[in-house]
Structures are given as structure tokens and as C-alpha cells.
Length: 79
Image (cartoon, rainbow, N blue to C red; front, side, top):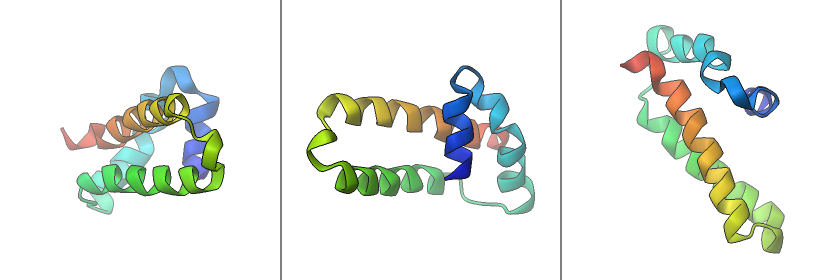
């Protein structure tokens, strides 16, 4: 969650923000990159359950777009 907070604080440069974390996950931890997408889905469910009616389709779309950039940034070292 701290890493997501960093991304929110530096929305214009998320890929650079996650460069070190991406390298750690790909080279040292060898995490399957598909797990980042699953984590994003789990986070969406948790946020939706907490926000309830405030989690409108527009909020959902914005959150999904943000998570897509985060997942892409985390997967960057895998290519």
C-alpha cells in the first residue's frame, strides 16, 4: 500500500517510481508478472467494498486506469 501511495504522489512518473521495485520483483524475488494483475483485482474488490455507493462506475474506471499503469510499471523489468 505504501508503494501505491508513492505512485499517487508522483502520478506523472509512475514507471520511474516503480523501477527499483520492478527490478526486485523480476530479478531477485522472481514473482510471476501475472500476479500483479491479480493483486490489482483484489485491491479493486477491497476498495469497492469499503467505498460502497461512492465506488461509482466513473471512480471504478479511474481506479482501474491507475492500477493498469501501476501493473505495467511493475512488469517493465520483465520485458
